[in-house]
Image 1 (cartoon, rainbow, N blue to C red):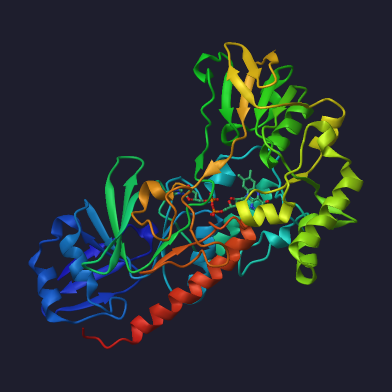
Image 2: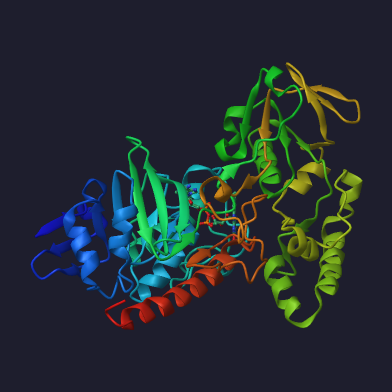
Length: 465
Ligand SMILES: Cc1cc2nc3c(=O)[nH]c(=O)nc-3n(C[C@H](O)[C@H](O)[C@H](O)COP(=O)(O)OP(=O)(O)OC[C@H]3O[C@@H](n4cnc5c(N)ncnc54)[C@H](O)[C@@H]3O)c2cc1C
């Protein structure tokens, strides 16, 4: 009898190969096949015997063992989920509820690494909490309408505990591809500590690496000459280190606006670069959240009409933003979001600071110099620091070998919401259709339901191939 054990934190998993009766007993959700044993005669013996466990209905386990080349090769009877952010946790929880085990991998050392490690201190949810909760567990009623990042992270930690989700941390997925020969996904990860490789083999792969996996760093002329600090918002924590400093914030999305406000509140002197047009909306209208109100109006009215109403309310509440060098796009805020994914800015106070002149608006940068920047309007100004609020991008094309469902250009599904969650051959995407946490919940429920169907179909499949 050969017995392969996984570490305890990966949930008491035992794969027993009983050479005498040639049966396989998967006591829990995983089995591990050490790569060095791939050519062990016991695997081939099992393969030829055509006895199968329900979790391995197609007898693929043994085939996988024969092609696996990594140092360690792990057969996962349920799906492999890449990413332990809100999306990965939501899918794992929905699956758990249906009795389907999964394995969650994350390159970081904690869950929700974007929220825990790459966001600024003053961050609160941009949308009211009811639109940000994950399936099966509401955000606590004692939390405010817009919970702080600490509260949201505490909720996610409680969520992982509630559904007993224990991701494999410090394992970055470096490649994943569907192997036609065995009809399975082969997902290779690399351990952060020792660079050791593990190959996970599964029927299902869920991509949950997020729309914000990598910081976008623009190439600005003269960037290497600038002698002050340059940092992306993913590294910005608070304006306190910039007190008294002249800081140029590049980008005027929600993050750029909020960082400018934070700098102001810490007695720095922020300048914000507004290159394109931008929609700024009040966060609330008549005591209701702008987002909630829009969702409600969309049930009754066409998008363009709702856009007109939003713009009218914004005009009354915020005034003409174009007079502050903040031109509005030709398309309305909702139409623009649905066509290009560009999110409107929900104002939480930055606009008042722009009006008062505490935050100054500048056009696009022409080039950077040793101590400052030249703008396209010819103005030259000195700065102590530059903060790039230039957004994020998906990293899917860097590791997933699949080009039909995912666009190589932006690493997002080619099909827009609500169809961007399911591809072919057991491949799924969660949280990648620019619908925020609400989209995450919808995707997660659909994915879990879909996988449950094939999981059950697999379990009732005849035990021979
Ligand atoms: C500042 C900020 C504020 C936001 N506020 C809101 C809000 O109020 N409401 C809202 O709905 N949305 C908001 N968002 C959008 C945000 O993207 C989602 O809230 C949410 O984080 C998406 O979850 P996710 O799990 O899809 O992605 P992420 O939270 O980015 O999680 C992805 C995970 O995948 C891991 N990963 C990536 N690549 C690999 C790899 N190759 N191998 C292994 N692991 C990998 C990462 O380490 C990460 O833990 C905000 C975003 C930002 C940046």
